[in-house]
Length: 95
Ligand SMILES: [Zn+2]
Image (cartoon, rainbow, N blue to C red; front, side, top):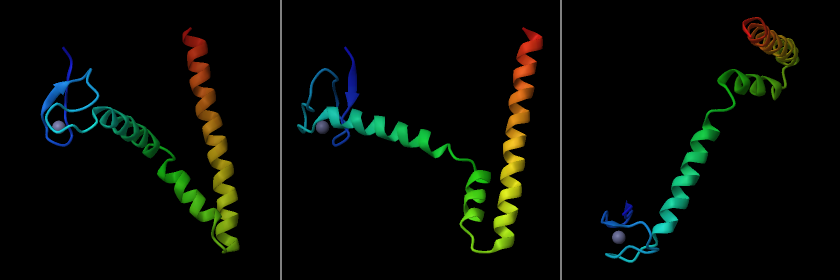
């Protein structure tokens, strides 16, 4: 029998039940919250610090910073394209 721990009273309850046998709190809500937390963790992984820094640069009113942004953005796109090409060619030659 699968058991889950109640988030309110920490009593182990049959996971097939909808409510805790000890305090009556809904056990299904705990499952939904866990799913949301997992989703939030996934969201935190992106974007990267460099991309965030670039976004901040873009919002700047300084024309020099805006110029720096367009240059860096171009380099970043080219860099990603090169990485993509290297990965692709490595796969091509090894396979
Ligand atoms: Zn409980």
